[in-house]
Image (cartoon, rainbow, N blue to C red; front, side):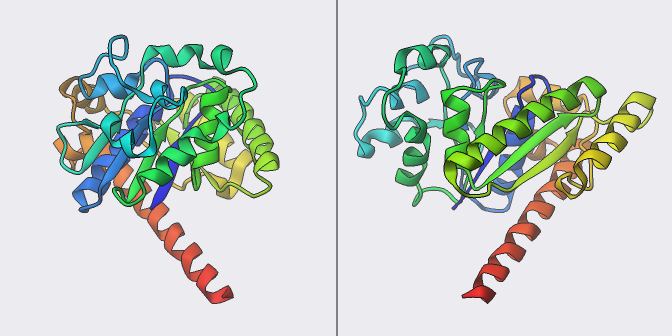
Length: 265
């Protein structure tokens, strides 16, 4: 089972869209996918028709030791999409940093949850909040790779700088490198700012940046209103094809890394 966290310390860059779109593509390939919503705003939860202000139980309950490991599957919700299940967020997640304080083990709750569900899913995609705190720490501790969507505008590059600093801090605490891939999003080749921001992104971060870019596509908004990933509803749209290329790139890298690890054994 692979686990991806989708994170950036700036909102509105396409984190939820990225997680949901990749999940749709993986489900089209016959994989079972768990989507984990760790954002108190609950955009992913709302995408599939649930109200984060009024949902219970949710991810929030995992942090209060009220569930035995065997009860965790009770938290999973249907998404209406075959092979995709949701671990929903509630707005109560916003209170966790204050409530948990220095409680031992609070940074490993999601990692332990994912491990408890490992036999049920091929892929886990975690949608992160846009701020550093216990929820982001949990996501980065649980994942095998970090995906960082970055809107192709100059102000968004500052959010990436903060995210990379957070990543470096987490790597020191993990005592292991966490692979990451920067994903340019909301790219509009018709505007000078978007083209210039993409160029600067590649110049600053080099090979860490995916070679493609996710274009602006109003169909993403329509798919969200309908509660279905665009990659399922309209798999041949511009946005869906871009995410398909991203997924193919990620899977190729994964296969290469696996082959290299086997070669070293």
